Length: 224
Image (cartoon, rainbow, N blue to C red):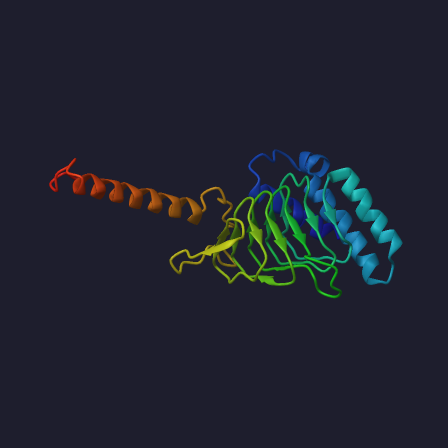
């Protein structure tokens, strides 16, 4: 248990430049508190306890603003930055070296039984306010942009942005691999909606110029 706590603290120093000391991290990082309490609750839940693990998770939510169901499976190296509003459902599975920002939901889409929450691969970065809803897999080395809503499977080594979430290719280049530094630059993701609007604007400008030519208000030699 001590070794896992030490690894969790190390992960925070690797991914958060604001971390100044071990004492600060231990006392002031709600993501760390939520993960530690979840580990206790998850172990009890796996042993057949129900009420006590739920009480622990509810206390963790009260203390940190982060709700992780005791049944959720969490891998090593999870970093929850700030964390207010993070919700992780009962059958969610989170891989290794995952980074989750505030307001993220790993939720279900209805009242179905059994596996109803997403499975998150390794080295995934989930931006603020993203919603990942349903029983499907998000592959390894994926980035999910802030505010995205993802409702279907995401292949590895891709980026997802928008509502609903759209997969954006990265030229066949992996976002990360297992032994590399976790890429946290989720603010520089492509925006296909904005790109489409720019293309439409350019098309309208060409049409307006063509109309001017046809009406004799501009010459063919003029360029946009």
